[in-house]
Length: 253
Image 1 (tube, rainbow, N blue to C red):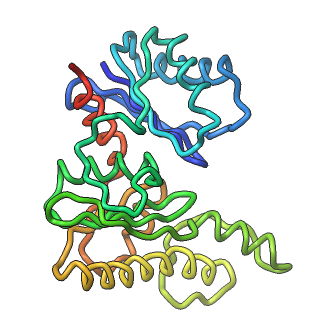
Image 2: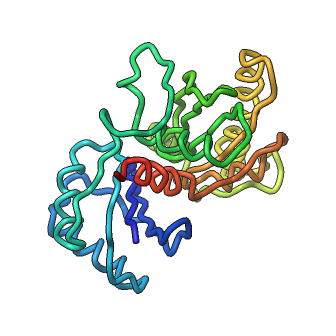
């Protein structure tokens, strides 16, 4: 079985694959100061809780460089395997048409690889997490670029922190677009506002592509936002876990 790990700024997402079947998955909070032993204990608990006894290989993508060494050592300690890290020199099959391809985040690479293998192209991928990112893939499977926007939780923390009367709220879809109280108005702005942003950005991307595209929504808050969309979209919560599995398989001799 293969352990896949996606390290984000807010959460570490874990998954275990047996062939092309996702056996289990889960989220851990990201702690940049975590030691190898601390991560190892959390990883061991995750595997034991899900009845996973043996790991044959592992692959990691990370947007938190400070944790890469810690997690590699932790996986080696708990599972006894070396970790393949997504980055330069790794086979992905992705054609990156950026001014500087090395700038592309590992999470974007992994998401694009999964989309190319699962959905009709061209495609637009929106990953809704600490940041909201958009990745545009043309019909040949090349990554053209995209956009980086403030994430919902990030924006709400700034909003409540910088204003005297706006509270911290849970993130859920409001019952209507016109909020009739402060909390609903904030939900409208964050959830419906992000949905409107996705709709508007999709229209602009498709205009530049010259054709309609498959819209794929992923990330921890993807489902909440997708419920408010007025355009067709696929919600794929396990997109990055699948992309990691595909990349692992591409790099086996």
